[in-house]
Length: 321
Ligand code: CP
Image 1 (cartoon, rainbow, N blue to C red):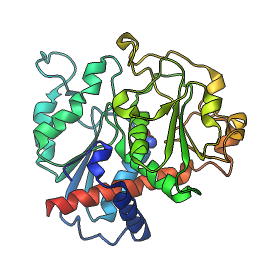
Image 2: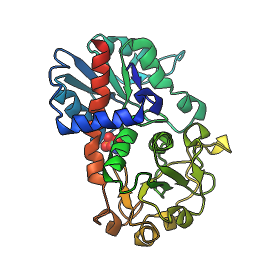
Image 3: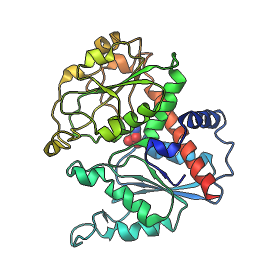
Image 4: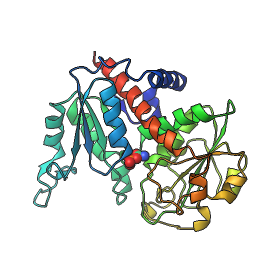
């Protein structure tokens, strides 16, 4: 495996889930695979889960993880080509990437969407440069449009908790005070479309996800109707994807509190499990009573980030041999 961005990169979903089960049963079984190998984890943005789970997964495999927080522990990096670098950015990705690559075998990159220029974000400008200039396998640790390690962990969690062969999974937009990227819902949609589930997306008008990720999912703008009979409710905020009006890209079009997932929403489901990628704003995205209920599986979901990361790193190490 040379890159991990999209669901297609993992290949057969059932095989990936089986491998995840094997890894979870004995996560130290491959502790020699990463001997004398180094993974560079490059963060342009903050993280709790991704940073810790990636380091843990790499360590389980016997790798040496190096974490670099760009701008805090390094020079500020210029990401755009052809600019006159007379501002506050002291180094360009064009040099920084091959230098970082010379010290490692695998690179993971977190680089969020800027939410200013749809074309720049949706062409994954930063991640693409890591592929082009590193010559190493590259993992998206949440890039401009995707968060595949999260979506794979979400799929593992649904597989573990499902009570039906083909559960109904609902991705619901929820309000948030800040404009957030679409990476998590994009990847979740992409992975759920590939999984053996009935998948429904619900969001206010103007928030429809890019068809590249939404695929053939049912989109229902009536949230309560969408939630009826759900087995899993996955709440997430995202800013306007700008599908119908590119001028609205990255904007907040609604803060409607009626979309906050609370007991009344969960009551119309089939005793659904509640999921969120975390971090989550309590009583904005989800009420305390829902996230604190026995149906909330946000902690095992986060714990599975270690497993999804380990499967991906394991496959990359195997392809290096
Ligand atoms: N879900 C997730 O990626 O969490 P962090 O932003 O804390 O890494």
